[in-house]
Length: 342
Image (cartoon, rainbow, N blue to C red; front, side):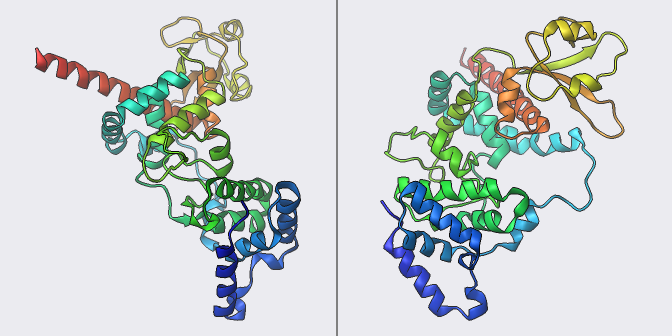
């Protein structure tokens, strides 16, 4: 199915209605014209339809402002970052989300092997359980980043390509999608390429929809983590302790992917907080907060998998700690109900 005639007519109407300065479009650019050719040659799109779709995209200056690094780099602070996500809104909201969607969460956990609390925590960190999904038109946001943001243009050009492919697959207008300034969509904030690769029609209604309700998002988050190597029943992270005075810098510099064998860590004097050897191959994660002692954690394979969702150790630890808080509160709730029923 090609992009629709309606897009062509809409673009023509815009061109007639707007003054010359406002009509300036990405299509006047060689890289955008090359994009049209690629969509035709690689994916069999109609050239006029892709051209009409790009004519609907507009430059979004706010998108560039939001994605650009600050002119002055801020000081990393784990405690400040953590406070954004480990709050009453996300804990109380997560418990309510868990209760309202228990059947879908249980089914996703059983199918993909990912704990319920991790699925809930990711959706909580990303969008506060669907409250903050973004109101940027995805077509314009991605076109802006693909053609007007050189530092990451190749990435966002691929995502613009994925958006058009996704729209064709779903029978939707490309301009009908709304999400974050970076093009992320719905409850789980998947980029278009992730929707195509990991999206699941979990409610069985025949299409993947991240806006109407959370069921598809629940299944898709679990599928994403499963697809990136989640290991069912294995640990995620635990606090590290230094048995001797050591310099942790080389261990941290080994990278976010777990490569440090338990024997290597033991030689360096690194144990769990309880003094036992690390459970498996790990990474050493440093969580810095100015003015306080740095926290060190052992991150296992499942911790690394969470960083595939967002490549930040702060992000992964926030998901982990929110999940732990939700699991503990949920257990308390169930115990209290059981006691009241006796």
